[in-house]
Image (cartoon, rainbow, N blue to C red; front, top):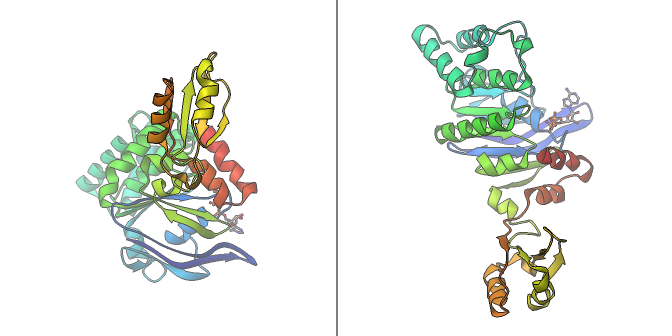
Length: 318
Ligand SMILES: Nc1ncnc2c1ncn2[C@@H]1O[C@H](COP(=O)(O)OP(=O)(O)OP(=O)(O)O)[C@@H](O)[C@H]1O
């Protein structure tokens, strides 16, 4: 449903998007990741027809965005960066206006608007000027506008930016619920969002694709993948350390009276069963036993330019 083919954008001598090719099929939620300035918004603007590519093509449901912009855009719902909207309109007037632009009228428009309001929980602020709304509500107005015409393709630029944890949860649930019949691209800095809603993740760095795989495959690249964290009593710590092969460190005392071991094995092979057997054979009952899936943050840092990668980890932890 979304096809980017050698998409490139230059601003003067600077290449912001450098030969990006990727497809998103119906039912997929693609996480679009990258440090600040990697080219995510520029790619989304070309996909939605707001910027003209310097080279390459973007197609939506078979329509070239440049050659058939009206047809292509009729299939797209777009939440731009910052969710701009007319400040002096209320959500109610803005959504009615957006429905008219989308060619909806009468009962069809009323049903579309009320579904969008319900999906984004906007009912309490419908008649308040948008400029007076909180950042989270402004974002939800933008999301409601993007969903209005039930588009086949959704392009969401940081949809949970500015939302509180409950609202973030609701928006992720909504994306999951509607994803079966749509192709969705979600740009985000929040790596936990990728695990929560995305079936695939593309990481871009300095305008180029550096990874295009499932969240599980990305996690499997982590040094910690298949590692085991074991918490034991202090009396057991030395014995556990010498009995288990491949101990990479003791991560300090978790609680008073406990030690934590983190165990990894070269090649990221599964070691949990072996470690459990060893502990049992030595009569050590672990207080906690966790198998690591891997850390997306670590993989992200490895794959992207280190100066700008700081941002992603900081935002993930915020
Ligand atoms: N109109 C423009 N003129 C010149 N440079 C631009 C323009 N728009 C974007 N850029 C540059 O292109 C690069 C990519 O910007 P873009 O906004 O696509 O990044 P991003 O990945 O969305 O970043 P962020 O995570 O901060 O939103 C940046 O270096 C940006 O400064």
